[in-house]
Length: 525
Image 1 (cartoon, rainbow, N blue to C red):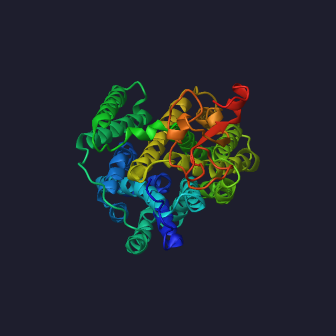
Image 2 (cartoon, rainbow, N blue to C red; image 1 turned 90 degrees about the vertical axis):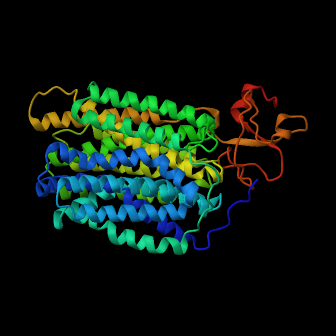
Image 3 (cartoon, one colour; image 1 turned 180 degrees about the horizontal axis):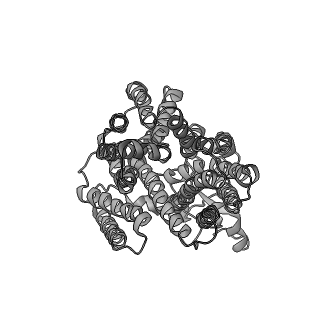
């Protein structure tokens, strides 16, 4: 077993650089939502060109995430991280200077390349810099909190800059932040070793084209619907390419996405839950903005400020996650977070033309913010749990890929659901009904994101394995018919933490569920 990484020499500086860089790329979708009206007027864009200002970024970002993760493993994560910051910051400057629509669209595509590099590299650098235990738990919790508040705070910042200065300011602000991070990263971030082996060219191509085709098809639904030949062709081609990608990865000597990462039910469940959770949240941001502006009569700046209560609660709750992690399994705040978000989303879906901001929007937002604060850290930590150091980049890439594709698909589903509302009554009443249907659909996605109530999601007790028991020769076995291996034990025992991680050092122990004990009438298998 490889030794655990040593404590980072300057942990506060490392964490600050990673979080600030990650935060810089997160609000970009929110900022562009607020910039579109001014950008369209300034650059004289058609509706189709305007949509591609947003879609070019989403398409490239989603399509290149796995490739960006692989680049970090092969070339060194700090080196690739800094390169991604350079690309993103330069593209932000070019967009802010854009004299024409094609320039802005091209700049957004380049910006997506930078984001696809920075996102997975930031998470893999975090896991490489902080040892397993309380330090990493706190770092991952703050990383999750950053993911949670990025979109909502981006709406506030973007609207304030667009209102007081210009839509261009939302892109210019990335330049000094990026420059500072580029200067500080080589000084404080540790460099990781380069993985040896051949570049998985066919895997990279099939993954990039497959994810890109699926994302493009979903994007196309906003204009042409799900039955459009373009949509059907793009999504079908993407699915076929992804199947080919899986087949390639099964045989690749050094795969871009090691399929062994899906052997853990905990990791796989985290990927799917993140996919569904983000699908619900993007619909929330998109339609709640319309609710406040078109139904409640807020101006764009007021609508941005309207998200502040959620942002504040989200951050406050997320800061409590490191303390909770030492007292209970991460599955408990995850389930609680999804349930609280679901309650807030369903409450918000009842808002209508007669609703007041306080009771119809702000109070449900408080629940949604608290739910995000609880859910994002375990969703992130479970996505990388037990992944060996050599697969840290790939695991980080999967976390961000499911995040990005989930937002694309979720928005497409929400828009399609809203389109089913018949056109009756006033325009305001019709929009309120569309928002209600879209948020109800988001509630269904959150319900699907809830983990299965299986014994493996609840605390277990470690029992010594006797000689001759399968756990003696392989100390990570479950006491069940399954011979699935547990992974990445931490060399200390804490009965409150997740059983997939823990056993006493140097002993052959088996995790024993109280549910399994009752089912076997007290006989240890």
